Length: 299
Image 1 (cartoon, helix red, strand yellow):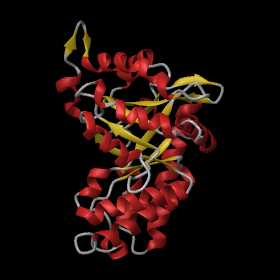
Image 2 (tube, one colour):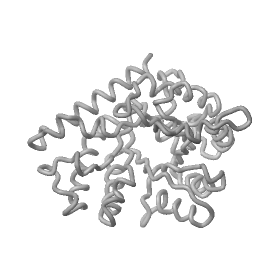
Image 3 (tube, helix red, strand yellow):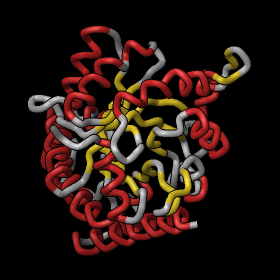
Image 4 (cartoon, one colour):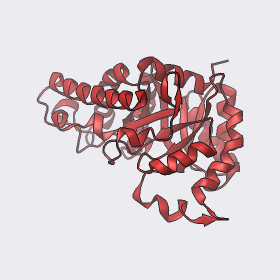
């Protein structure tokens, strides 16, 4: 049986000495068509060339790749096929693949989503998948069961990074916000995916744009690894991003910090005239983000 997801993730993060997670978000208007082709005309070719080029650089700097499935699905069946191909390519490059699909449904439908995202071919065979818990805890069970059986992880939306998160997540329930109640509901479930490292593969999505909430969330879920969006393009600093991490002998740790547009579409890359210039620009952006997060974790 495969090692626990949490153990594999924390080992790779420690080896890279940075919690950087690279988000793979294909935006047709940001991908230089002269270098990658036109995704409107040949989405499979453009997406695969762009994605493999990103992964070739990302594997040097980050432990985790996070393909955003919705941005592949917009290109139809070829986009979906490209996403599956790039998940395999990322794994073969030595990265952990966290599929950002944000699934959430009940019963047999949830079981189908779990097989599609975490299961072997024809599934994505991702190492971890994001899920939405707001239909209830029973919607998470098929994902947790699949993850437990196959050494995978599940990243649950708890306190998200978007500006409208508070519309529902901040509503008070019995004197505490909804996101805190979700964390309390999830805390016992972390035992199901606990690794020998003391970290659980039942992850909590905790937006870097809300660092104080991340600290409170850590109190509620002391063993959960965090997936932290919001760093970089969304405005959160490296210090904000690791606010929910804890001090260990290796420095601050306890999760991964995602950067997508900030490292895959730096201005110099979008202006690149050839692949050499593009790779150098993306390499510089990823190296800078990895180092900034490394420094924040060393304090």
